[in-house]
Length: 219
Length: 93
Image (tube, rainbow over the protein chains, first blue to last red):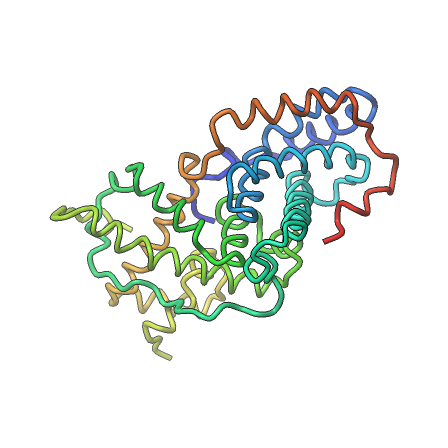
């Protein structure tokens, strides 16, 4: 994986051991430790909910509800999956339940079966991307443009992109929580990335008139 | 076999993830040596992923964590952890 680590530093085996010990203590009655247990997963759970609900307030509400459901169900977590992946699965189910109840946009939100979207998944052909300076990636409006572009992806691509590239679940974990095959995960991720490349590459180019530097020639 | 640009594009995502087989990887790399267009597409896609991995890009709303923990603090006191097994409703699609 490329990227700076959506969850900050990579978690180590020691982190997972502490996590398992914390769960055991919560189940023994130290329930206030649940706060510490979920802290490293909060962002992941929220972004999962946002990828489903597309609305910040609804995503936040779904996050809170999913966390409470996870607390109640904690005894059923046996450690076969990572705790964070288990939380993501609970969150996805909470969001599906809400979307079904609200009967909102069923064609978009519930279309996770075999049907794939029609579309043009070829990339934007640029010849001067390599002239874009490193500072461009530091600009806030570029990050906002990416957030907006991800929000506008078709749901099936947004969900896979969120889990794989923002939350850094692996292909198998993503397939499991979305209940699709590993191959479908790869196809959707490729399409999501190409749609984003097509949308963002010209924006980046347009935002930098007349800049000439050969930063990318070193890669 | 000499890869065409369109063929390289179809592999870009798996190439970035390191999941193409060795022979295809070699073909792609040979192609990239002489194709500026595909190199630019690869770089741009990679950089979108660098931006994606930047913790500043996808943020939680201001006060999100405080509100979450306040609600948990209020409700954990009144909430019981279920006994084994009774969580079917969690995973009913």
